[in-house]
Amino acid sequence: MGSRWWQRGAVCALAILLGVVLAACGGAGGGGRGGDGGFSSEVVAQQVEIAADPSGALRWDRATYEATAGDISFVVKNPSPIAHQFTLEGPGVNRRSKNFGANTTNTFTVKALPAGEYRIICDYPGHKAAGMVATLVVR
Ligand SMILES: [Cu+2]
Image 1 (cartoon, helix red, strand yellow):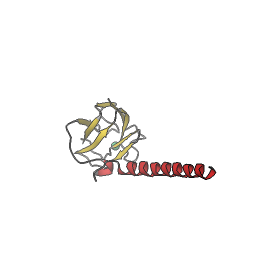
Image 2 (tube, protein in one colour):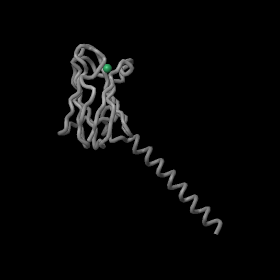
Image 3 (cartoon, helix red, strand yellow):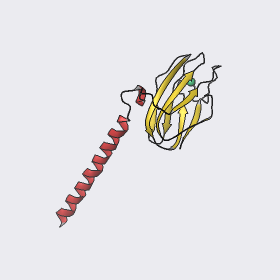
Image 4 (cartoon, protein in one colour):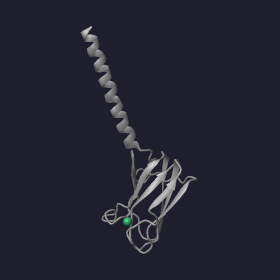
């Protein structure tokens, strides 16, 4: 009887361990499709336009962006004279683009984004601290 309880405990421990490993793998995979920093390069129907301030001020063109849960292509315009970066951060989500240069438009796609509140951050050194952070509301 005693050994049965021990065995059951061991099986449970193994299941928990496997669960953790699987969760870790899922997180690392991120559905990136080999895209940039966890983003897919595929362009989907739902497109959210985001622009850096054209004057070079360290802010996005809006404080809040909205989207519908699902696949989203973020069309990120940089009409400013300086480089920026695009990070999407939220519960279980942390996707980061490479830095991109002045006068470029870059598209970053996230597949199956759940409803929730996310942050759109420019993680180019110093920009986030200066306030280049916006909110993305996904419904
Ligand atoms: Cu920036």
